[in-house]
Amino acid sequence: MGFLERLSLATFSALQFHFLRFFRQWVAVLASIILFFGAGYFLLAPPQFTGIKTIVIAQGASLRTVAGELADAHVISYPLVLRLLLQGSGEDSHIQAGAYRFDAPENLLLVMHTIITAGYSIPPVRITFPEGATVRDMAARIAEALPSISATDFLASGQPYEGYLFPDTYHFSSSADVSSILRAMRANFTAKTTPLTGEITASGHSLSDAVIMASLLEKEARTSVVRRMISGILWNRLQRGMPLQVDAVFGYIYGRDTYAPSLTDLRVNSPYNTYTHKGLPPGPIDNPGLDSLEAAIHPTPTKYLYYLTDKEGVMHYATTYAAHEANRRKYLQPY
Figure 1 (cartoon, rainbow, N blue to C red):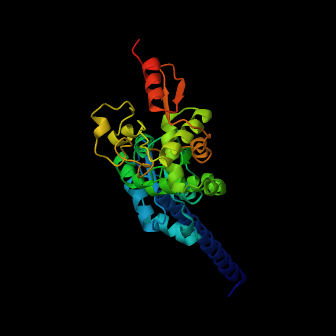
Figure 2: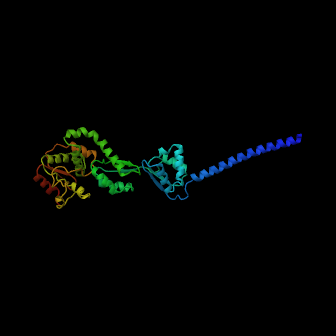
Figure 3: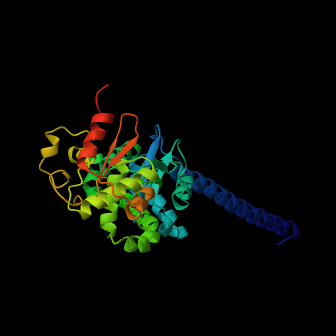
């Protein structure tokens, strides 16, 4: 083979080598482009996304359930891809329960980051329960603030805990349910009343009796001084075997915010009727605050057995029924 022939063969081989290398590189680039755009296709937000989406991930929900709910709401297009990404990254066990709000379409990677970092865009719901609120009152406030909870459901579950749901300001997740709300309020009651355990024991009353008395005081008085005085009067009446004759119970009996019973009301057949039944009512009539609880266990020592509030809100006390009737004629007579 001549020199020129050998040179031509070497040149052809070199060109062939460079062509094959060039071809492989471009194939790799093309494959990367296809893979990139293909992956991007799976990661894109679904075109069906419209409006604002709120997704609630329940505690302990499975990955399949979470991915399915996101897909059903058109937050993601491919639930299987989300599951594979979470499982492949080892983040499938880090999904955070709660309520998530998606205001605009997001790619799948951002959605994935949101649910594993608890990136809530829905702030906790702030609910304040005033002292003396009944479970019925609380149910109405909760249903208004958390539409996913019905007042009927909360009332049914919370009624047995009347008196033991501490009135306070709470911040509940928008995904909160009846059970979690009741647990939080019961735990707060325990935390607030535990420091009073020794004082309750020293008072000679049980926690149950103290809470019932406090619930009456919550409705009967508005200041600490008056609450302690009425507490002394009511304990005096109980000690003497007299009916308490507390008007506030009728609001509880009839489920309304009125405490001016009619003559018919006074005869209603209810164990909460403190005119026809002696002793404390069978349970609290509301959820009292700390001031009323302290008044129940630290009553003002007194010989009074009767009290009334005049039309100006001033309290008047008496030791005998005759004196009490005189106060009624003097301070409650029509103008």
